[in-house]
Figure 1 (cartoon, one colour):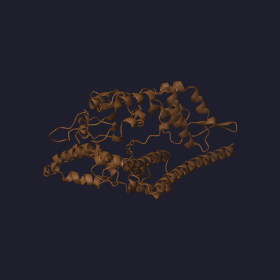
Figure 2 (cartoon, rainbow, N blue to C red):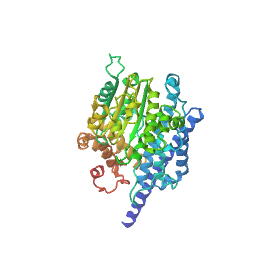
Figure 3 (spheres, rainbow, N blue to C red):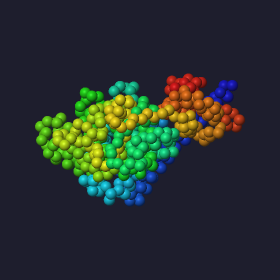
Figure 4 (tube, rainbow, N blue to C red):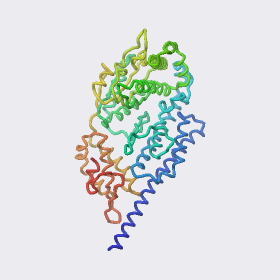
Length: 472
């Protein structure tokens, strides 16, 4: 018996090692695929946004590739998620540059400076969608040269914000077709009217309710594409406390620079114009007043860049309300500073619109005022199951080499009770995703007529006999 037990433990250990090896090889292949796509794009003489930062990111990952196999289970999951995010951002950077080239002749007369992929000095990390990915890579792989701030305590793990992008894989968006059409119609206006009105709309809901997913469906909606010549996605992200004036200024400054960068303006040239403007020079002795004037000048430049086109701007994930975002339909003041409101940088001359997403209804209404406000409905059972199914199978494949869903006993049992399970998750996308990840730790499969259960490798604090506890 002891011999048989030892042999069983050895077999289990070898299977776990093989599974981990397969997972690492999969990530290494994913990295090679991403790097090949990046280099092929360059060798084809095709420009890509944030090229230098992407080169630095891929160089860092290649240098630390040998450490992939040494990572603990949770870090491997983080790395796998990072590689998926990099894939989306790489597509975004390629598509932005190609789109910019196609629209140069149409937009040239409304953009005051030549485009440049080089961000201004000292603003690299705040203006690029690539910089947060590099910070996350350093956090996962433990690079000592990272400029990211250290955690407050020895056991406290820094949680990096995951920036949303306009890159949308429509195959991964389930449900809400009617709701997306309703929001799109609210932004574009009645089809029979050829008005030039500015419109604003909001989407609110708790974390994980699907605000960003619904906004993404609107962003790629045919009605939106046909109505607005320019579409711009802006992830706002975390907002500093009210008493931190320095951080508040930096958030606004970063937001406007990212918008101008994505519009194709040479941000180093923008910086020269801002610092050389009379509005800023007259406050040279007052740093706070000079900073406010810089925001005003940036808003003026944004206004000029957008003035001759029809645009849709999505301001996604406004975490904390700030009066600066209030009443986006306001025109700029005829006299005085422009720094008081973001609205002043959004021209109202052509048919244009802004869509905001935030967590509270009152904040959404304060921003869009008379515009319509929407809330993502709970996912229908069929759409929720598609989301659960996709996430469950992705996680199960990480745990088991050669995973086949047809042989998964637990999956087939869950499929029978999918309606009850979706009800337990209240139809919330974030709850459905977490449930899928939790259940996948205990996926049970059949091989040679023997039922086997994969052992959980990342579920912490879960009872090994209770998959429902792992999903909670």
